[in-house]
Length: 247
Image 1 (cartoon, one colour):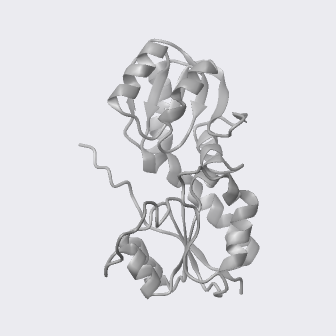
Image 2 (tube, helix red, strand yellow; image 1 turned 135 degrees about the horizontal axis):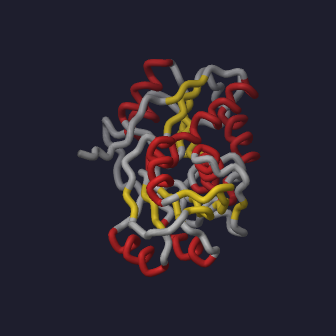
Image 3 (cartoon, one colour; image 1 turned 45 degrees about the vertical axis):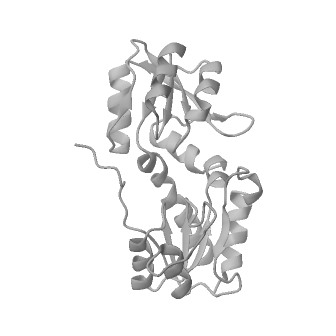
């Protein structure tokens, strides 16, 4: 039976924790690295409901994308995910920005999901850049992304064909300018503010905001499948949906 450290070391091999951003808090965030792993639950976010799912399935390890502890903790109160994880001896490993940038990580899975298979990473690996073989109209591109990700799309309307695309799952708008400098016709990410859409208009680039959850969650299943195959420990994906409701 593998130990928590074995799972940590494998994730560190494919998505080195040393590559996380300075502001990030990825790693073993709760628990005992020497504890034997009975079952693993994989989740994008760790919520009270996810902790309950782990308890009900007998999982003593949760592997998440978003860190359980992100900002400094001033208190740990009953009912909070951190309290419940520690109370129930559920270990937690979070792989955030290191998994964003990893080969076969968040951005790579997102590229393949939308049909951009021959992509390249920028030097800092923050975004992927790829081209469709055949350019698409803006409407065709938007409908394609919407259909594949099953999400509500927000975008700015620029009448142009879409061929070269920059991709960054989650909150990637810090790299909008980089995508523009690289000559991208469109930039696909999860979240975007009003002002980022104005910036995109000025740059002449189509900005697609397809949902934070929708652009990142697809990459949790491949990570689960690899770990389940290598270690032979029972694994499951948490039942989750986007906390954002659109009407």
